[in-house]
Image (cartoon, rainbow, N blue to C red; front, top):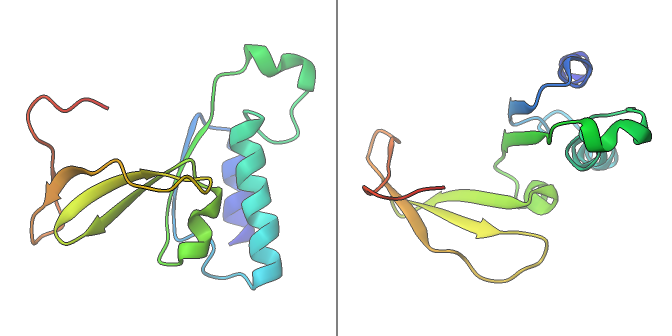
Length: 117
């Protein structure tokens, strides 16, 4: 798993999508990996020259999890519940932004016409 994460960081993509990346780590390792994810997004890459920050494009990381503690590093959380997709901010900001889509029984999100994100 660490090799796959390292490959993703070395490739330095603008968008990195991971399915349950924390599942194989104990709590201590999990914190280290979460810190690397945050660094990747906040610094627009890992181990990059700080002088080039303003010339680098932003980084986005999308990941899935079934552990509520893992979402602590996320800026925005999309959660499926009661057949709807809800968007909420994170970083200890209470509340939800409300449903942004309905989800059919097959798990396909259906955005209302005119919704822009």
